[in-house]
Amino acid sequence: MSSPTGDSPALGLIGLGLLGSALAERLLAGGFRVIGWDLDAARREAFARSGGHVAGGAGEVFSAPTRLMLSLPSHREVNALLRDHAAAVHPGLTVIDTTTGDPDSSAALAAELARRGCVYLDATVSGSSAQVREGTAVLMVGGDAAAFAACADIFSQLGCQAFHTGPAGSGAKMKLVTNTVLGLNRAALAEGLALARGLGLDAAQALAVMRGGPAYSRIMDRKGEKMLHSEFSPEARLSQHLKDVRLIVEHGRAAGLPMPLSATHRAILEQAEAAGLGALDNSAIIQVLGRAKP
Image (tube, rainbow, N blue to C red; front, top):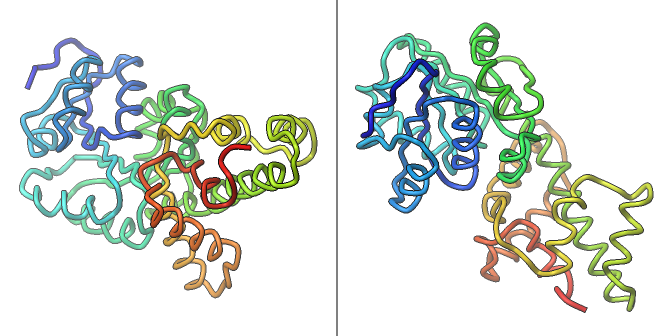
């Protein structure tokens, strides 16, 4: 691993995928020294080219800084990582987990790490990797309030707002709430554009009309053109959102809610994944709601 130098703050980052690489870029641009790791060699190489310091393995990232960020596919990978590197988890470490995972798992992990003298914050992100790069994402952070305040330098660099949502697990819960509305907005936009085409209207004009009237939502700014032009390079993958929607339905029903819209949304996303669209941007949901092109 290249050794960081200088007086700028250092932190670790494990997971350099779509979101993790965007987080790294923001932190590096803000003067942080970022020590990173990912199982994918190509991601490690891209991180190094951007100015990051590549560790020799995940264990080395744990031992280097006092603040460690995680950006992994789900809570399962987070739990496995912390289990496999338990010996490297040292007292005084603050774990900032940006993974969208199970809120119950986040709360349990926070309690376990607290017993070992560590702090865990579930710092979920509302916004795509592109929005993180632009600095327009919003962070929703559960955990100790003092630890949240102590990480203000990180959160202010990563997004335009950071909310302390309550105890550990509440950040993950808030992410499920925001993703419920965000995902349904995206699905409604896809169905509306599909309807415009089905009725013989100009879909681009339909998007312009919706953006100019009360049907407007910010999702149109990011996903409308992608849907119009079938340009599905991923900002956030469809399969990742399906994982989130499954959690939304599970936790909603556990709270006694019927979740009919999210249940339907889950079924549509499952159809899209079965059609081979899972690795594409989540705007590719339009492919199973109507013709992608007029």
